[in-house]
Length: 222
Length: 298
Image (cartoon, rainbow over the protein chains, first blue to last red):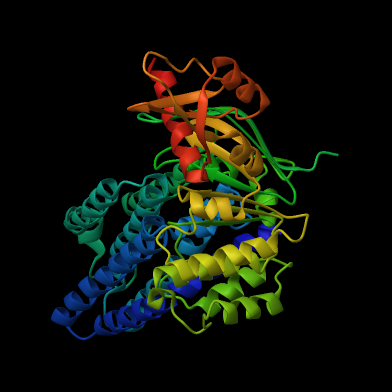
């Protein structure tokens, strides 16, 4: 019974974010479609794509984890026949499914758009590194929201996550490997870019795994 | 086989500014336990420990035969929990919540849910955010009652409700325990509600259980006695006396041990009893709390 309850909770969360998910997909699709329309449009489209993913990340996590706790809906959910660990796992699955749906769709759309239009494929590693950062950011924010009730820590994570992007993008664009290949017709995957992508993903996964482990061991859940 | 649905022994839980100390609690099938205490007494903490939402630092907690919080997922399949501060998803409708809960519980009784909808004047298409406080409590109760749980844990469900809504909810709860396999733990600081529906009563104050008994025993053994005491005479220590107040020649003694032994002591002391008053549960509760606090202060 408890396994099916967990899936019911996953479906519940997905149902509750369905409009947010659809809206983010639509807004992201418009942003990606703007990318090949000239240099100014590419800039606007790129910034819009990043904004869509970050805003979706924040609204998704804060709405389904932090707000649920703040509004005392958590009491209702925890009154259902599941353990606290199953509740956490259900939250991770639901949030990851929702976020990855939008992230993957927009990442694939970005790659295809760059590949089939006049945008140099040499920019692909840069874009993948930026998108991987947002994925890692999602993992960290979800971890913080699951691990702590503190809105202060959640706000701090959001601030750091958003501001760090302002350092990451210039850093990536200043990498010799990116400068050397950004205008190439083919993508060149150098070791430094692959390492950055790997670090971003590992940070997100490690943060999430730590939060799930720590929260599962906490006896007090409300 | 034990018929205990709640079996709590020696449970303690410490917070920075509050401590639940050595709580013992037992409830049998077919009974309604009124769990009465002032605000901040430890009722909510105790109930959340019973639900597995909090882990006790010490002691044993068994609910429906399951150790908590370890077996909470199994135990909660047969527990219905409603608390005054529990909220449903504001953006969803009551009908959506009904479908969610019905999909989780095979025991969901759709006909009973429909009866409750009509009795509580609720509509499935209503969004939760459009419901009043009373309607939200009724909606939460509907979601719990229609799955026919063996145990209801209700944490101040009638707080903030108008008298009519309270009457409707208490009536529904009385119906639930007509089935002798079911039991209810009902916490409140409203002694009127507790007196109306409970057959067992436990008082809690400042994290400690201060008294527990069946309702009739409480009402039978607590009395307020008025004596006419001539000048120069005093009232000796009487069995179970918890407080004494003097107004002119009238002395009022509150006792928690009214019975033949006390009557004999009164006769021996040659006291003239002016009146023996029965006490309401609220008066018993207040006297009980105050006398315990005085004893602790000594």
